[in-house]
Length: 243
Ligand code: NAD
Image (tube, rainbow, N blue to C red):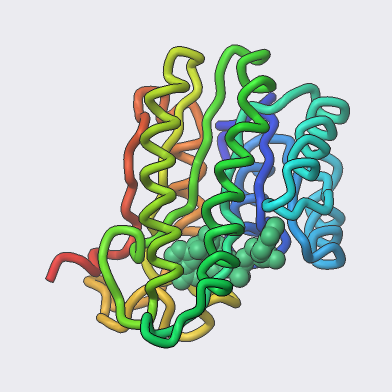
């Protein structure tokens, strides 16, 4: 650990388990204060309790604009502001296009796309007040290629890349960087085996990622190490698209 986020304050969504928990632990381990937002209250509180006083849990349904206002207000009152936002929360579903419903598509877009949309809007004033910031959107390899039965999830993750680039252009003048991470298959509750969600094809490295390997990429983009990286898609998939 090298205190790469010393003095910074982050909001991490979906931080109660899986990839989000690792991102929270990694940022906190680098000196960052972290507000963990999730809908899994018991798990989220347990993560905050385990990591100690520079982390705090709050119930944040990313589809709820008022929840976002509360989370930003909490980060500001407890830790002094917001420098980093990691839009990590998402839901996943496999369904063939011909069997998918608009209701299920809407549910996925609501969390995976509208959530980051609202989150970016919510943190802009707080980041401007700090002179800038870094936003990291967790997309997916499913946001740059196609897999059978991944239509709704894939649409949400492709669209998140569009949001990333638009926000990056608009917010550059405010010294707010916005980037996307496109992980391959990570070993989490969403993807506990080598089977899914991000492709049945064996990766170049022929294994799932450990969540720490993705968290390291998020840390890079969130920190000043990536001070000239803006609007990019950083693929972290072990080389699974190499053919
Ligand atoms: P996960 O299901 O283990 O964790 C997702 C977290 O998001 C959970 O804690 C959940 O409670 C939270 N969440 C869901 N809906 C929410 C809402 N409305 N508001 C707030 N929080 C909500 O999944 P994961 O594997 O840890 O996924 C983390 C991120 O990585 C997601 O964006 C996912 O799409 C992405 N990703 C995962 C993989 C993989 O193979 N696991 C691959 C590529 C990308």
